[in-house]
Every structure is written in C-alpha cells, then in structure tokens.
Amino acid sequence: MNKKIFSLTKVLLKNSFQRYSNKKTKNKIGMMLLYAILVVYIMGIFGVLSYQIINTLKQINQESIFIGLFLMGIAIFIIVQAMISATNVFYFSKDLEYILPLPLKPREIMISKFNVILITEYVIEFIFALVPIIIYGILTSGGILYYLITFLVLLAFPVIPLILSTIIVMIIMSFTKGVKNKDRFQLIVPLLGIILAIAISFATTGTSEITESEIIEKLLKANELVEIINEKFLIIKPAVNAIVHSNFIEFLKFILITILGYVIFIFIGSKLYFRGAIGNLSSGNKSKKNVNTKNIKKNKIGIAYVEKELKILFRNPIFFVQCVLPSIFMPILFLGIIIFSVNNEINDLNTITNVLGEYVKSPIGIAIIISVTEFIYSMLYIAPTAISRDGSNANFMKYIPVTYYKQLIYKGIPNIIFGMISAIIILVFVYYITRVEFTFLLICLILDFILIIIQTLLMELVDLRKPKLDWSTEYAVVKQNMNLLWPFVVGIVEMMIAFGIAIPLKNISYIIFAGIFAIIHIVFTYVINRYIYKKQDELLNKVI
Image (cartoon, rainbow, N blue to C red):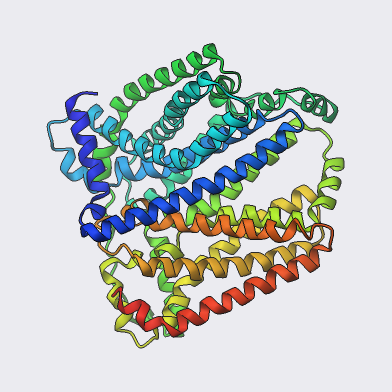
C-alpha cells in the first residue's frame, strides 16, 4: 500500500467517525464505555449460543458443521451488506466531488474506498466471530495451529465477498451516464447487484440430486455434512476445510484464491471505476416539479403524518436501502436458499414436510419462528432512526399542533408495517415447508405483531436518547450510528425469553404457550407506552 492510498484511507475513516471525535471528553468516554459493554454483551450472547450448538453437535460427532454454517452465514451477510455499502461509498458519497479532482489515480481512490468498507467488515466480523471461533477451538481441543489458521482465514475471508459485490456494482454503475432519474437508479443498483451476486453464487454449483437415504448416510459420517453445506458456496469451501482440519494446503488454496481475486478486482476496477464515478457526478440530477396547489387534498393528521414518513423512506433511496431493504430482502434470500437447496438435494419432501409440520406445532417451534423473525427485525432500522432521519429539520416536531406522543406513534407505524411484511414472508415459507394449519400461522402472526410494536417503541426511545441530527449525508444516519446495535440486542433478549418460556413448557399446547408469551409482552408494551406518554415532553425537549 503506497503512501497516497494509506493517507486517503485514513482521511476517509476519520471523516466517517468524525462525530465521535467532536464530542466532549467526558461524554465520549461515557459513550465508549456504554458501547464497549454493549459489544461485550453481544459477544457473550453469541458465545452462549455457540457453546450450546457445538455441544449438541458433538453428541452426534458433527461439531464441524458449526464452522460450515457459521462461515456460510457470514459470507451471505457480507455480500448483502457490501452490495449496499459499495454502492454508497464508491459512487454516492459526497466526498467524490472533492477527491476526483485531486492528483490521484482511479486505482488509488478505488483501493482506499475498498479499504474503508473492508475495515468496517472487520469490526462486524470481530464482534460476531471472535467468541464462537474461540469456543469451537476450546470444545474441540484445537491447538495453536487451529487458532493461527483460523485467525488468518478470518482476516482474508471478507475480501472475496467484498470483491464480488464491488465488481458487480462497478459493472452496473459503468452504465450510469445518461440516467435521468438518479435517485431511482440509486435504489435499483443494490437490488440488481444483490440478485446478480446470488445468481453467480448458484451458477457455480451443480444441480445434482441425491436421495433422502443418501443424505441420511452422509449425516452418519463425521464431517460429511460440511461438504453438503458448502457445495453451494464453493467460495468458502477451502476456508472451511482449512479451519476444520487445520489443513495447510487448503489454507494456501484459500489465500491464493483471495490474492487472485484481489488482482482481478484491481484490473477490472481500474478500467470501470473512474468512468462510473464521473458518469454519476455528471448525470441524472433530480428534476424539479412545480407544485400544483389544486391537487392538494386534505387528510387526517395521522394519515398525513404517516404518509410523510413513508415518502421520506421511499423518495430517499439511501434511507430505503439502508433502513428497509435488508429486513425485506434477507428473509427472501436466506429462506430462498434453504428451499432451493432442499429441493435440489431431496427428491421426496412429503415425509420431511409431515415431520416438520408436527414438530413446529409446539412451544419450541413457535420459539424458533419468533427467533427467526426477531433476527430479521434486528435489520429493520426505521424506528432506530425515526428522529435522526429528520436531521436539522427535527424542529418541525415542535411547531405543528400535534402532541409529541402522537408524532412518535405516527413515526413508528412504518416500522410496524415493514416489520409485518417481513413476518408474513417468513410465515409463507413456514407454510411452504411444513404445511401447518392457518390457525397456527395466525397465532404466530399475532405474536410477531406484538413483538414489532415493542421493538418500535424501544428503538424510538433509543433514538431519542442519542439521535444523530448533525449528518451531512444520509448514508451516515445508518452506517455511522452506533444506536443500530440496539435492535440486535432486543432481538437476542426476545429469543432468550422465547426459549426460556418454551423449554420448560415444551410438553404443553402451543396455544397455551402463545397465550402466556402474549400476556407477558402486552403488559410490557403497556408499561413502555405509558412511560412514553407521561415523559413525552421531557424526552423530546432534550433533543429538539
């Protein structure tokens, strides 16, 4: 890395986290301590879950499947996140106007921006991967070689998913010149890119089918299941083999693939990046529309306010991509991959469908569905940015004849709407796989509705506590907002509550379990709601 690339990377990183360095020393230390505790808490939760999963798998001599599933999940997550991040960092960040005229080669700008995204992925990987990998090593008696290879694999692991995402974005953005609606194109790019990335991943795999008996036979053999999982994700297969078997040859293969991918990235990026960046700056300004006052219709205050919030999300592509898209796309992506893989690997699903249908109609089954839904809710960032998205215009809340409490409720409704859309998508997949009756799905939907209301109220309180109002670009509202760790924390807590109630009551009717779970959360919702109602003036006056 030459000096120009290093300096530009440092400047871009400093600019990204400038808001934290501008705070008073006392407040900065307090916030750092709070977020450190939050990170440790998240890592602890992952540690407990990993310990339980690995211990369970050890009983059937299949602990190695943990690494396969773990890396597969990280790879998919990085691809989706990187597709969104690459679009904004490489092409839609305002710093391009100042960087492009500088005496820098397109390759240097491109590598610097790539480094910024890569460092962000390292932080995420550190939080989610460190403790599970250590616990796996302890439980499987991994030696020094295991930890050394695993550390090096995790260091290189995000590179290939990032390269795949970035190259796809560059190819798409090379056609931006002449695009009339820049905002709409900004929304289409990550969507199209994610679809292409997943299509490429599956295009590299075969469509061979194996029977149910063959799968059972493979399950009885140690480490065979890892091979089944990673057949669909050839990009991570050498990494899994290197970690599971401490295989130095597989490790070298993985490193060579990574280096080759990086070289290809630099070559392709040097040809495409500059053209796309210039095209983005010189095309597609927003068209100004004259407001026709004759078409203005009167509406009820609540409906008009919710419409305003929805228009902010839909008309601003960065807000939509960052706050809404992951919660809608991720369930389709993950569950679609599962169904695609199952359909390709098993010829007759009737037996499995019947077994799953009976198993899922239990407290444990509902707890699993709630956990999947909560995981998706943790990617829904509408409520955690409800105040922050207004930025300097947040004072608007003071000057309209609507109480703060009602405004907070109206601001939370879009979060509930998109949360329920995600829940419905998940339940459609549950029905596809299990063919459970409508009554069960309706009960699950009601529980999901209660949970999204709680999550919305809590996340609005989080945003009221530390809103990010002094942003210069919409991208910063999400990517530079540490408050967005809290939805994940709430999701983990809800998963623990669900299983904490379900496990002791696993032999009772799922209807009774659902009733107990619902009553507890309705009471909790009432308490939070009353708190917001009584403290509304105090909460908002501290912010705006």
